Image (cartoon, rainbow, N blue to C red; front, side):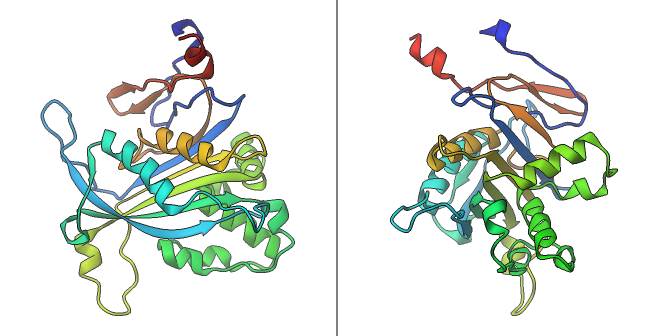
Length: 274
């Protein structure tokens, strides 16, 4: 196993660990935290416990879900996330008033080609998340949809890159293909309670955006499980860049002055050999 795993170190770059359950799938993660936000830790680096409650955000069923089919529910997705958040010492509170954070969960499947035939671009999405509505002030519906999808999966920074940049081209390709995604958006409970009537949402404390290419061979429940496990290394972390990771590779999360190695998830080969 160690011979098959490769560690790549890049300063200030988010490098992910994903499983080998599916051939050559690439997972994209953007992890952002508010400037000045830093989780309290013990001297040995152990994160102190923080509590949260889940809130249901927006669900995107995708264009291919039959009327008789049901996608992965909010309860199922939140259960997957709860297990992984616990590994980061985030604990589910019994009541919202006792929680440190409100975690708003958006999830589903983006189907850009199919959605291009529909003229129902709804800019209220960014209001729900506290994102910049100006990104939707564009002339073309197709371009608006593309930019909306870029916001959802966390690739809006590509519009600041050179038009011929290889990184930008790869990110643009990611926006144009079908993808399963989970977004976890953390708001401080104290700031939410302090809002007056009609006030906009406060700035999130942290956001983790996860997505993986979808296919008919990849069930949504399996995809969301993989995304939740991948996100465990990034909840509450501020990473300066985003990148694509292939399943089955072992990589590290690089921070200033610190390299943290993360274990790979078990592959089918390793499970079958037991």
